[in-house]
Image 1 (cartoon, helix red, strand yellow):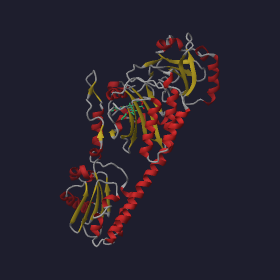
Image 2: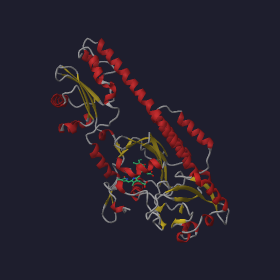
Image 3: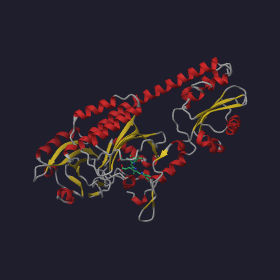
Image 4: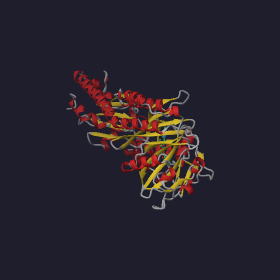
Length: 500
Ligand code: BLA
């Protein structure tokens, strides 16, 4: 396992987070051999939580650990038990008879896993079907993506009481943006903030497709090791992909500390087998949310995942419809104008409204008309010269003009993305659409955070530094947004009267 100080941005993806060999100490874990049903590993904190040393538990059989009816219940569950954790029931305190620990079971990596979680504050942890019904009702009332996300964060916050519940959506480059948020009024809003892809490494993303909910009730914990740390059968720590108590990456704990977050719960949102985003819940103080409520949130996450595609399709259709309407109206203006160029910009909608863009330019017979946010006229002239020499095709488009032409660096704020449609055979006659550089359009969340230095002097990766890496990656690049191609520019350009 890589040590904290050895982890940096380049090897972050290699940290074996599925085999930490330790658990979060708010609960304890027993790993039993699948066949013999004897304990092969126990977390060292059984001593503190149960009054029995982990080493003494190794070798014990189920019937020594649990009352007969629970052993029977496990035997009953076993044939159908897989990676999905099941709540077995509650272990009562021997002395007081009060609920003491919940027992959560799953089977994976040749082991039967028994995880014991303390019973949370009763009021905050009861499963209420009425509440679930209402939460789903609210979510289902949304037709658009953003509305759907907003209802979801509000319902998850209602159920769990976290200080902040947000939806973090990934874009194609795997960076993410907070697109919905429900929060305590004292907290600064995060809505609209962007984070680089490196904040969630690849192996974590892969794991989150298998395990849909992760929970850290107290991020300042000291991990409890397994005794022994390696499974004697496989000679390595057991694979905790599906374990509730898995100890998480120390680098992520540091990240949470930097964010001022003491407890988190995160739910995967999946579309077509790919991680679409996450519901991230944060609390400023430690917070134990009961297993049943977490299960209910996972259910909401799965419902969300099943429906998000239809919401995205609705938005896309609405967008296409709006663009088509704009095209039709624009063509009407063009065909009813004596001067076709005037038809392109004198009335709404203008040529700028037929694509998702920041600005547009009409270049015709030596004249340049600029609409919205565009480069200067002189810069557009240079661009036209470049297009004629280097992009002889009728349609040219790019998300990063600077990658084709170094001079394009100066155009980044308005025109990292360019779509150019040549209007007729006459050189220099073009319709141009511009999109700004993505860095210019986002607000970065790490901008004000300090660089952290570890005790041994090694610089710790802070959100600010990972932003710098991300910025270099996306510099001079426009947000992919809606693809240029979907609006059929060529057809539009050629049906106008003068360019036939
Ligand atoms: C994990 N980083 C994560 C997770 C999130 C974030 C959501 C998943 C945590 C979980 O499911 O429990 C990041 N959390 C965010 C972001 C927001 C948020 C962006 O709430 C926005 C609001 N992290 C870094 C860097 C590295 C890194 C530079 O910033 C690596 C060098 C590592 N992040 C890292 C690791 C994990 C992680 C290793 C996995 C933690 C684990 O599950 O063990």
